[in-house]
Image (cartoon, rainbow, N blue to C red; front, top):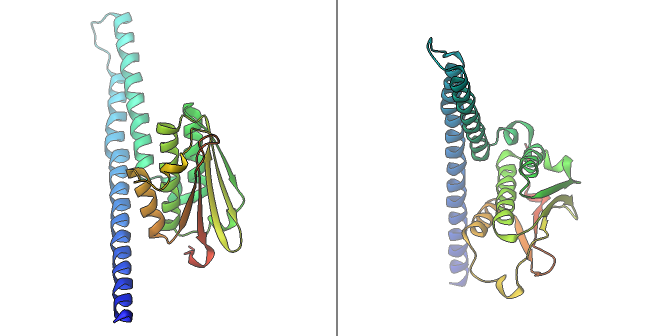
Length: 234
């Protein structure tokens, strides 16, 4: 009876992991579709509108007012194009698919640094391993880091964050830290928010584990460990 219960429990866990994998894969597929539609359809249409404004010049007009109208319209359109491009990138980063995890994380950090919201540094001492990860695994790590960065910007009050990839005893380690307000020790095991639940789901899907650093004075920290024996290479 005990063996049957254990076997049933293991089967339930395996089924739950299969469902989680299917959900995450469908989410990524939908992100990719929406991102491509935004880039191809909306982006192209808006760029066409900008071209029409440049070409349009009525026979009777006030040169100064027309110039102001044209410049302000093109400025608004340029902002919309940039916003659409950023949304498309966040939904489905093409850099991740074509150039790998290191390039995608570097690009995302550059965008955040340029925005002035946060100063992020990236130290990749495991590039040979990271660049051989399968796309599904790379996507999981990218989404987790994206969520961590968003949480830092929204909730921590931090001015700087750091990402480090290392290998140790046949384990790929991803360390993320910031210099924000951190997590009180008595809140580490409390009910997690949606962001942390998303991170847990992504890591569970690739059989990775994590541990949090509880510290109120030195900021937030999380260490993710992924055994090299679990790594699915390209």
